[in-house]
Image 1 (tube, rainbow, N blue to C red):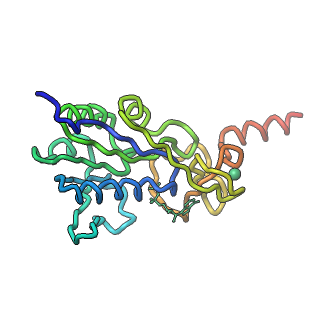
Image 2: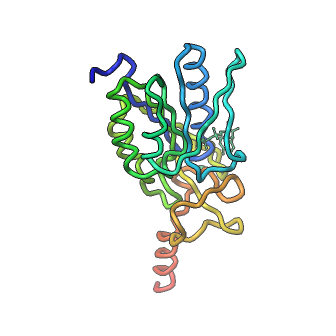
Length: 203
Ligand code: ADP
Ligand code: ZN
């Protein structure tokens, strides 16, 4: 199949609170203004906005974000005539999203994907790394480090207000009550902190 002129992959990535969803919705609104047929998906795990999130443009058109639990579901739900396919919270999806995104772009669709690139340990998160590799366009956004005010790039998971241990599950959905945006210097990597403490004890 000959790809349409718009076939491409755009990835919006970065730490939590860096404005990835805002940027994704901005692009979606502009695509609606351009009269493209737009479909928005997001991981079903993210129900922080009470299920389905509405996106509306200034001319009053509204669009829903469909909750999906797998990359297959995204592939199945994409309409043939969709010009733009947006996926939010893609770090929670399986690796299959890489092939799905490629296939959709090959079919001429503009694929916009947002997701955080590192887990709370500072390690690559799910399919986002491979998605960055195949994307035509990447925007890495930063938040504000809540400790020092510098540009934040890392997710700090909190448990009772303290950095959580490395052993916890990689996927644990939460907002400001359980995560902070921090810069490299202020981010506490739990396992490294434990090893450091051990070294100090041993003298
Ligand atoms: P993301 O999708 O990257 O998690 P959102 O688009 O949902 O981000 O939210 C971005 C908004 O979060 C910002 O516009 C700002 O109002 C708010 N915010 C809360 N904490 C921070 C922070 N530490 N740094 C920057 N923005 C923050
Ligand atoms: Zn900092």
